Length: 192
Image 1 (tube, rainbow, N blue to C red):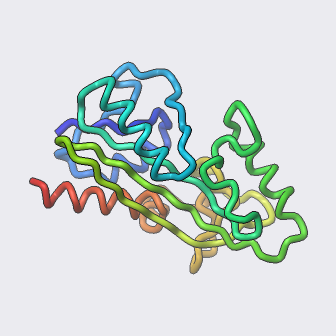
Image 2 (image 1 turned 30 degrees about the vertical axis):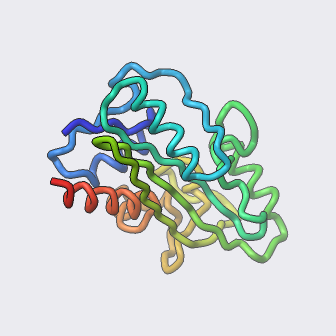
């Protein structure tokens, strides 16, 4: 079965591809010639995921799914949230986002945070949502070179390494995105 993932983020695609069954042929936006940035105008992860999935379905007619994810930090009133990718402004820049986050948390004792993702799946005329959350804390400095986004400054509860210090396999055992993708896979297996 062909299934489009509404992203051109190669690292996200890599994370998700290893979680899907071999029966799924995963296509990226590039594979279906969608090169434009899909506007994320929603004010929740769920709304943005649905906007992206509907856009791709309307352009291709192929079953698809999209995620919207972000970092929510307690001491910052759950910011950056849906604005995580562009927290430091345009254009998207992971390093600038982390710099701003660490600056805003300087001197704050509460460093609790969570990664939050919502996946919208549009398949065979139906709309389905899957959610994953992993709680943890923000470090004082970057550690590790793997992953992307805020991975170098996030340590999941019960772990001692940032997401950027983990291998892809280890990250996929605990990440917010893998929790949601595993729900999606279980749902799709029931459909067949």
